[in-house]
Amino acid sequence: MKYTARTDVGLKRENNEDNLYARIYDDENALFVVCDGLGGYSSGEVASKVAVNCIRDNFEANIEKLKQSNQDEIQDFLVSVIKIANEKIFNMQITNPNYKGMGTTAVLVAKINNKLYYESVGDSRLYYIDKDKENIEQVTVDDTYVNELVRKKIIDKSEAKNHPQKHVLTKALGIFGSIEVKVDSLIKENGFLLLCSDGLTNMVKNDNILDIIKSSDFMTLSDALVDNANRNGGADNVTVIVIEI
Image 1: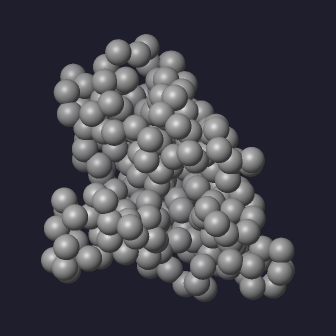
Image 2: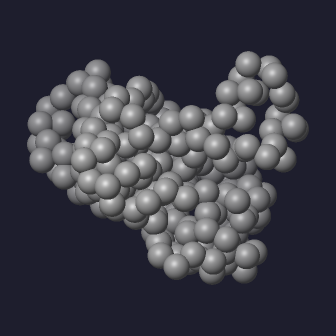
Image 3: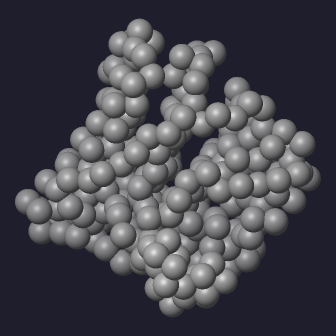
């Protein structure tokens, strides 16, 4: 396993509200996180940083215990780290007027005892690219109002693409005192994982992401993806982690 990562302010924003964490602890254990502070809310950069640090600190404090845990215990732990981060951000925003209304998305991949797990809140995404770099598929499901309309068959996927409320979130860390989150096992062997904020996916289409992955040296992939988002307008902060599994 190896990775390349980058976060960038983009061309239109004054500050970067995205944060990331990426670390390989040993051959069987690693942690990757991307968080995107909510645009239009105060102190989004604080929320994303708090979430990343909270997830990292709890993971690292328990890594030796996790090595002795079964799959159910690991999944329960990963749910708990998201809930702890949510509660911390929520308490900050209801007790400090400077932080009122802040929140963040989160997407996480953890390798524990040589097994991959993932979870997400909001619209930061996880993609899988096959080892031959022929196909790209979105693994996570966006927590958005439009996705709810699609799920309820009120609109179809073609209508969702250009819906005026397609970026309205139905879930984010820190907005409410409690949150429901699901952890899944990622049953993939070989290939690549891409964690990213919507600053990438709003600027670069999936087919173009695949083309970049095909044509770039692995260690330059994060730079190539970010640079492409900026060439296409750089309307938002952009964060990527690419992992070879």
